[in-house]
Image 1 (cartoon, one colour):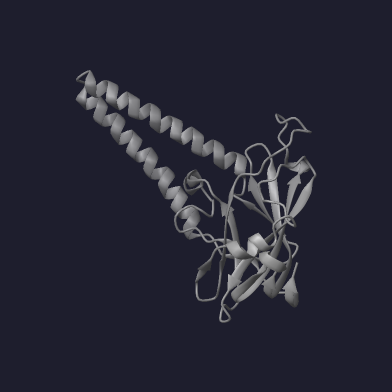
Image 2: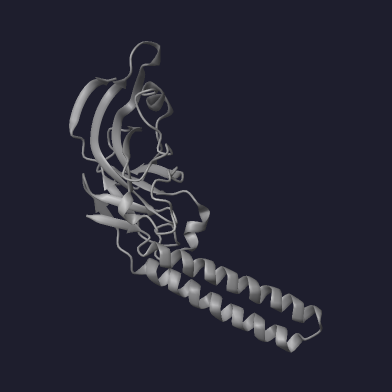
Length: 236
């Protein structure tokens, strides 16, 4: 399964940019006519802007209200738009451990460490015709959290990540078209954290204004299921 966030990303981004430009021009026209003493014209421009903004906002919320939560299994991909290309993320492995690392760098979990291996892939087939085919990409920052069945949220474990320093690649590492790498993310989950799932999503606040984007108000999310495939007392 391949899920694009948002679907038809190019059209969605162009719709947002065009709408923002039009509203900006209407705002300037409103201020200019108001300053010129043309109050009636200014009010008509204001009304037009309000109607257009309402239509865009209504469409944004409509897509959110009709969205459905998705749970991706191992090997299934979630794509993110990088404007002129796409990057795909996949959870390839999940393991658990009480301790990580050795010697002074060893870390012990308060509950149980969940080590999640995420594959980042620059899909060469998604490159825009305007982008040089061999141009490297540094993926945009992502927000990462694990949620359990009770809705509790967990960030990465600082101690756990330090124990893996040198053995994992950061999610913002540059990629060339077709390249991929894996990143290990460590979460310290309590014993009663049932059915954990990982949310990888855009960090940019502007994504909340994109129609059909999971960051838009009320939109359901696309998670990765975290089913441990191995158990160990220590991982290096």
